[in-house]
Structures are given as C-alpha cells and as structure tokens.
Length: 341
Image (cartoon, rainbow, N blue to C red; front, side, top):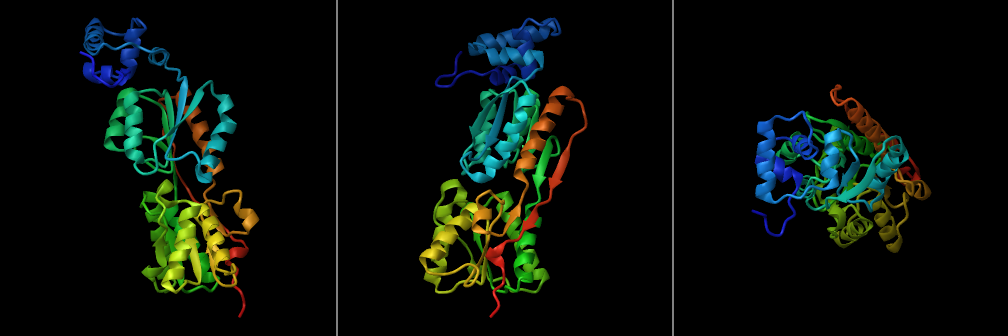
C-alpha cells in the first residue's frame, strides 16, 4: 500500500526490508552480489510501498556519490558563507553536484532528520548541526559519507570549533585592556556554541577576579537566525539604554550582532571605544572596515578541510577518522582599545 501525502523513498524501502540503502540500490541495478533471499525481501518491500526508483537511487550501487548536500541552519549569514566559500573553491576536485539544504535555525535537528528521511544526498557536509540518535541511525543505514563542521560525534569525521576557548579569549582580552564591567549580547535561542562561548567568557572573568554582572548579559528581541543578526545587536543596545546603565565593554556572540550594536550606539551618540568597547566573533570580511576586534574561527580554512576530508572518505571509505578541534584566535583592533582618562 502507498503512504498518502508523502513520496516513498529508498530509505523507507530499506527500512521495511531491514537492509542498507546500498543493498536496495544493488537490487535495483540487478547486481549479482545480493542473495536471492535478500532480493526477495527488497522486492516485496518495493511492491508493498509502490516504490518508483529515481536515478539517484540507482547511482548508489556504484558506490560513487553524485550529489553532495551542504546541510546548514542558514545560508544567508556571513559566518556560514565563509565555510561555503572554502567548500566551493575545493569542490572542482570532486565530480559531484552540490545542493545547499537549509535546515532552519530554530530547529536544525528536526530539519536534518527530515532531510535524511527523504534520502536525496549521496554525501554530506553538515555545518553546526548536532547528530541525534535518529540521524545517526539513518546515516548508519544509508552508509552516506559525512563530515561534520562545528559539531562532533564519535562515529564520524569532524572539525569541531573550540567555542569555549573563543569566549575565554574574548573575556581575557577585554580584561587585559582594563575593562571591568563586562557585558555580552547573546542569541535569543541558546545553541551549543553560544552556551560554550558564554561559559568561556565567564570563566575568564572568574579567573581574573572580575565580577560577573548578569544584568549586562542580554539578548535582542529578534528571533530571526536565532538572534545572530544586526537587528538583535541593535535591539540589545537599546535595552541597555532603557536600563539606564551600560557596561564598559560588550562581547557580541557574532560579528553580525556587533554591526547592529555599532549602529545603535551611533544613534545614541556614543563613541567606540571612547564610551564603550565592542567586540564580535567570526572575523567576517566587513569587520576590518569597522576596525572591530573579533575572534577568528578560520571558517574558510575549515570549509577547505571539510571538502578535502570528504574526498578522502569517498576514495578510502575504510580509512581512519579525522576528528579535529579547531582553536580560534584573537584579532585585536581599535574597537576595544582602552582610552586613557
């Protein structure tokens, strides 16, 4: 019987037959390397589900991926664009078509589960997406080559970002510049990376005996892109204004927030760094023109590393895993320079 309202995928056939997707693909391609008993199970599942195979399903039997999916919570923010640039500049070495899949920033876990449920990709680079047990099971069943960026899982290759160290570097820098009343603009939706950055920032404050004033740890009101936006940074500054009290220095969760904060402070007639110091996170290209202090996550380099590693997995699927932690670096500029009084 056919499931109403949903297109039947090769993943569902494999699940019903109790075999891997690659096995279903071999049956579709009349491969001799499948037992008659397994063929019968797969064909029974195909008939029961009224499955109509697509070209992409047949390609899997060759074990040569054809479609690379970049799964990302958002492809409009500069942070993710830097990773994508690195991937794009290296993709010519692989004979792959590329598609960008937006999982959505509010619930990327559900988005990636739905993506794998459809079974449309032959290879994946997943950016800033945690691998749930459901996704792990889907990947194990499909045998799809995958590289994680900005998250980690013991079963897969990954390039994890040391966000806690980045937060610590931000706090340490501001403290060494002589600032003592420190604030932070956070995203409105907590993510693993945002919590780690905040934890590292607070760790630096405690290590240097600087009081942690939680009233200065605020968010904007915008929910777009989880609050990592210019609007959120702009709104947060006006929250300080309504509070009637500003910190001496503010650490923004990303550079885009910092750009919004710059604009809001300009509207209020406040000068950077004379009246307040501002720093961001990511070191996107625009920050150099604002003279914005920031944390560089080496995102372009990570994108290059990810696609190179994926190529190695495709060529040598049984090789040892690469699981690397990428340490960020501080990029000091004028926006946090301590002004003599």
